[in-house]
Length: 482
Ligand code: 5AD
Ligand code: SF4
Image (cartoon, rainbow, N blue to C red; front, top):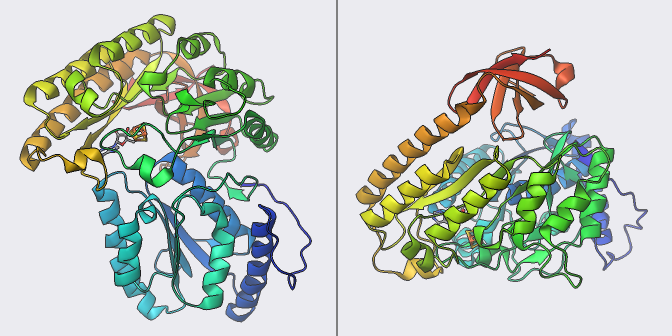
């Protein structure tokens, strides 16, 4: 699904424009010439394989890169081995995300031996770390292009420059230099889309690398967000997810202050928008205004992702989270009182330096009391450069693994029970994909619960009523109602 197709009439012999996004469209036009020439020789368009690691912010940035590649004449493929260009949008939030990329590079090096013109591109958060970019430069010379999170929008220009010089190009900016909008973007779904409302993070949780690789918090202007949502709606999108590392502090950096709840109220007025979601909420900034909005809105889904990280007030203080266990549970109480059917989800970490068995039991207690529908559970990962990484009281692996297993078992037990509360009810479901089993489709309720049911392809992207007959833990089997 393609959005934003600006046509500019460029004199390609003239120097590149200095303004954005015109400059990028100029390089797209230059790239298109090269790709056409290549296509004429190969007798088929060149292909690309793009894989995204990590969060929805990365997904969004990948959509822009894919949009540009499509725009200049590449065709997407799911064969990493055969693709003419392989791109990885990397994540560095935990060590295992980094390991995956290096593992994959070993294989691609091998593929490149039999396909020497294959190009390899790495971008995203992991590349934003100096040591990683340096490692690529010194140990992975077969990688052709590397860029970071701040200059993602320059992909066309960088790719063109890399082809021209025909040597490895690494370009990372230490700081963001403004927000560039209105580039092509290739969305995964025609009926639902994510929209960035802010970039970066100012919270500096002691374990987290995100503020270092995504920079300071910047909010987009409401007018720009509304323009994007209107455009998406005109293209058939009915479900919008507003994205940011901490959406509850939206608007604080704008010259004219706007609260997140105010923004939501404007967004839901856009004609054609049927469902609104948002991610991620930091408990310290979740306002009464937002809770009131959630209770009264007819479009905002009753699902709140509210990462707790730990249940121990001592650990939370050390993590620099700015709330304690009691404040978190009080917040949950207030939300449940205002929105009784809310589905609550969380991110929880075990093995933070210095975490004791008592601290861990506090975490287990929060899971029981908060009654999460589901939670992402993580093993603390030591990220170089963060305050927590410097601590000497790192927890032995076996202890962490044992806590992780116990936490996961509890999260699953609570989640199974919570999710089953809809058994036998009829819910509105957005039909999203056809499953591997032909004729069986998968959709999502406003509570973010998945349902599988027999339907037909015309129903894709539509809202249908589904009777949720059987709860299978984290998803339902059902059938169309009425
Ligand atoms: N180790 C483990 N998990 C982490 N997260 C962030 N940093 C780390 C880390 N160093 C988790 C947090 C966050 C989620 C996106 O990733 O739980 O909410
Ligand atoms: Fe990381 Fe904390 Fe910012 Fe989330 S709020 S991105 S955990 S620093």
